[in-house]
Length: 103
Image (cartoon, rainbow, N blue to C red; front, side, top):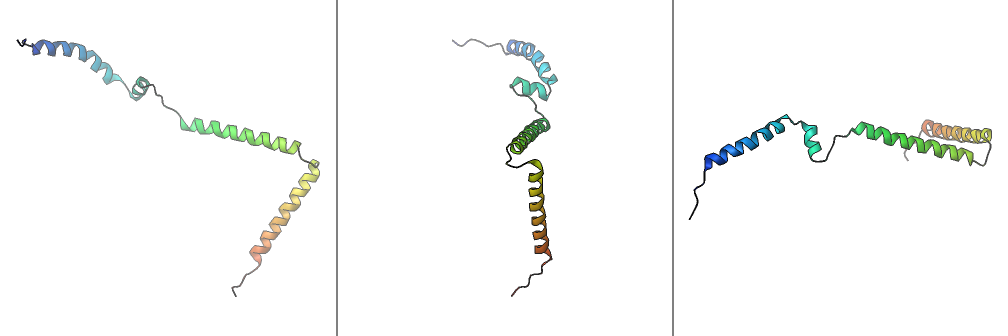
């Protein structure tokens, strides 16, 4: 035989158990929800600055090693770089100032 079910008792018990939990849930903010799922907020700017710091450090170390391993003395190396830079600048200046005509 089917047993009569007391819906009023079930409603009272559910209300007593759910009400405190509902109040806790209502007080939760977005950080609490993320923490309940095992997540957290991250600052993207801090991550980018950290990566740029490591890139800069790597460039400085590479520059230092390159200068230490250079086959010429510092003054000779600077003179060569200066000559190449001036030659390239003059070449670009000639190319820009030389008019070209279509045939």
